[in-house]
Amino acid sequence: MVGKSPTLHEVADRAGVSIATVSRVARGFGQVSPATRSKVQEVIEDLNYRPSHFGRALVKRRHGALGLVFPGLRGPYYSEVIHGFEVQSVAAKMSLMILGTELLGGADDQVLGMADRTDGLAIMGGAVDDDLVHRLARRHIPIVTLARHQLDDIPNVRVDNYSNTVTLTRHLIVEHGYRTLQFIGNIVGAPDATDRWAGFQQAHRDAGLRPPDQPYFFGYEQTAGVIAANEILDSPPWPQAIVCGNDELAFGALSAAATRGVRVPDDLAITGWDDIPFARIATPPLTTVHQPARDLGAETARLLLGTIKGLAGPPHELVLPTELVIRASCGCAAIPNRHHGTAPTAADP
Image (cartoon, one colour):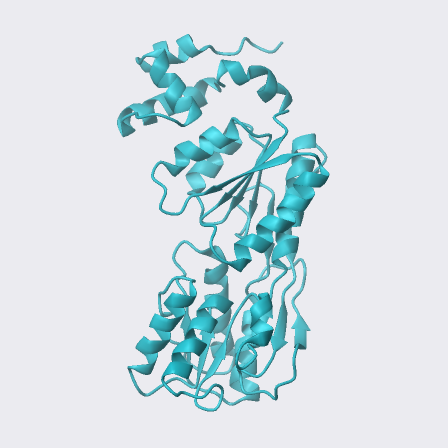
């Protein structure tokens, strides 16, 4: 027989606080000291408490809404992922709540509050700590993670960031004969970028070359690409090629090179990652790796909807393929959309 659900008063008594404090902690809103918040959250999890006025909706998971938690919302990559997710949400007649955690104080509380107002959450890698994902799972919140490696048995969707970064870097080393390459992109707390950096390093080892000790740690905006490229160009000798962690960084690097009269690819090859629409009309057109960002969002939504309905089956990980797109910025002839290889769909790097 199912036991009686704990009440707000029982949680308050166990934690030694007022019911107002419990309410603020449970809903993720209001000012509570970190020590008190931690104590109340521990009791909430121990008792598996849910705010009472959401009781019926939480039991049936019928809020009619899905939650999407991102580390940030800037740039074309995020918009493509959101679009893919939104199309599936609308088809399922579900509304969509989006939370960006970048520079947001109390992000954990905001995510917990969103969990109580949606039927399930999709959480992008790097948006919150693994501990919070585990806490949500223990509370039986339907969760799907994306753009990261799978965490325990929580369903996950990602793209293969490793294989075609190896292919891209190998193309620069073997087909063009470049021996000095640099990688731009912050890999701290960024699972996608970590895999790309690992692929960059592996291609060097495969060719018997020593890779750089570390990447140039810059964010993923175009302005960061300008700053990073200028830093590299201010410290001769220049590398023969720069592998950027995304296309926006590459656009910044191209801009910096043009401003300084550095010819791409004659003086310096530059490549990107993502294959956003502007990549093909850059000057020169950008060699990059295409990732199916819209499909990433769509498949995540499908898996989350299936998880909510109990139709998803055993927890699993879906890995979407990527594809190297060779254009002129690496030194190849300016043949638009020349594709080279497709990464496997299931095997991990």
